[in-house]
Length: 278
Image (cartoon, rainbow, N blue to C red; front, top):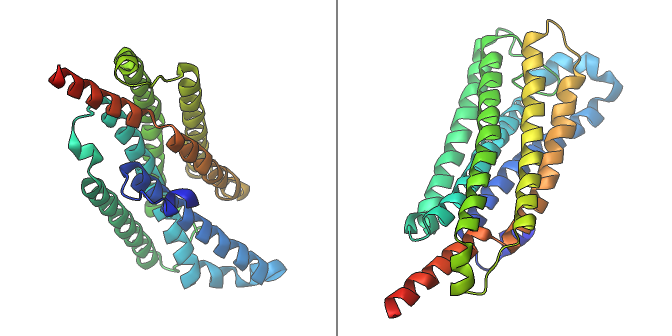
């Protein structure tokens, strides 16, 4: 991820999308750091300070950062997936390669994510009589109130949509790359290794889908079970989500080294120019 941030070719559309994903992951890591520091600070005396912590400004800040991070990550991955597909599908459409067009989209959904998350957190704070967040992890999910139910529903629906969309568009991308391969070999010396491409797609889809389905299952359990162990949320925040964050640099860093959409669009442009010359 650092390589993408310090890359000299910072105007690349793909880089901008991965930067937005990195920003969302960074916010989650900051929230996790605050939780860890609070756990060390309170230690065994936490039960005494439970009410103080769950209505503190820092706890609400953690809740906001986690919510923003989840929304930005989902939207960033969806845009990366769509960008790959449309660059291959429509290589001559300049919109998908225009850095200003894409940075405006990135800016819009980041601002929207921040405003929406802050608004929901403030609504919870002022609508709850005691102002206490549902759990010591400072998350908006875990409670049985209307706002917690709404947050869980939004996150779960988005994750399930992404779990369906990601493999569909990746399969379409592979089909388009394979369909254009005979043109690529004649125009430029570019040939994709189908096995490696499919393996990369499988790893990418598997990691994200397993994460989304696991989180969605745990969130639904917090709503449906009359009582649930707090370890359910501990697993989601401290194990499942950080695992995906650790995997993202390998997924999108490795992909960047050999980007099929870039090779395909370059080859098709070469074909078009050669036809014009002849």
